[in-house]
Amino acid sequence: MKFRTEVNIEVSSKKIEIEDSIFSIGSCFASEMSDLFSKGQLQTNNNPFGTLFNPFSINNAVKRLHDSQFYHEEELITFNDEFISLDHHTSFDTRFIHQTLEKINQKIVEGNQFLQDTNWVIITYGTSFIYEFMPKKKLVANCHKIPQKFFEKRLLTHQEITDSIYDTILNLKDIGKDDVQILFTVSPVRHTKDGMIENQLSKSKLITAIHEVISEIENCHYLPVYEILMDDLRDYRFYKEDMIHPNNQAVNYIFEKFADAYFSSETKDFIKENFKIQKALEHRSDDEKDPKYIEFREKLNQRIEIQQRRTKHKIFK
Image 1 (cartoon, rainbow, N blue to C red):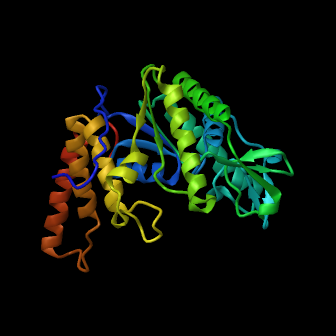
Image 2 (image 1 turned 90 degrees about the vertical axis):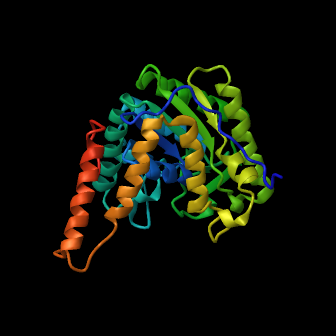
């Protein structure tokens, strides 16, 4: 007997290899997946604008990265004695304008360079809702806890979403390798503050638009991450205490399904061993001169050396 409806990811003929570079952008779930890639010692670059949620803002970020277009003083605003970019996450906010611009523009340089040699791009959309900052008539990526009275909230239209997705693909294909693979996902994190019905409408618009745009574009794929959590892991034991975000068990389950569909066997073995090494590296001893601990570290270093011989890029930096 079957006791759950399992959702499978279609096996890809194109595989992620040990030396491949993976760029990810989008919601906090994109960051969780990227953290696992990084922990497995693959080459990654994640969210150079910080966490982003809607297709319009993600497209804006990709265009700025594609053009290597720096931000300037007139593009920032001030709030609570900090200089802020409404295109970025709050982690870029500082009390000094040159520091905010330096943090932003350094990430643009890094992201532009990484994209030029990227094999895989993973885009995770979180919502179809967007906010407009009324004083500047500007659609924003993040409200930075500025009072609600300065914003108007609305759903992006279907045309705005599809145009954003299409433009994002064009820019990524232009800057990336000839056969760059672009994987689209919809975050399984429910935006309950929008309302449960509104959240479903928002997610549905994203899923519909993605399928419409990528159906006739080569090397674009849809990963059913949202469907796996909603239909396969349909139980609150797979959520954190807030009952909204997937817990580590759920994230690891989705990652394993993704690996089975997209990783080569060599990559899976490489990552599996690196996960074990990473866990061993977390072990600490009160007496680092203990012969047993010294022997443990020597054997661990030998394992790292064996793994390093399997790849050209530096691992366990």
